[in-house]
Image 1 (cartoon, rainbow, N blue to C red):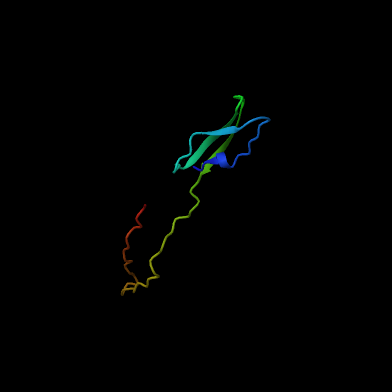
Image 2 (cartoon, rainbow, N blue to C red):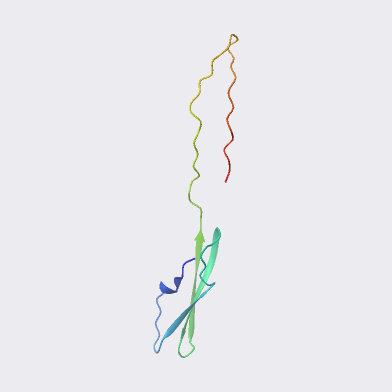
Length: 91
């Protein structure tokens, strides 16, 4: 999760404003949605907060490669045996 404190716009009538994020930024998120709250605090201990959601989605389609087109020869009874192929491994 990014550190969104650098993206927030903060101002105060007087003094320096510090900004805190909850939860703290992390390197990796799990799939799903997380709520983030930013809290601004000025030198007089006045605070204000805002919240937003960050959603991590897997939007990458899986890749697949099919076997090549096959031709099966028919026997005297106009029947044939279809060959076998391995199932695709799931990751």
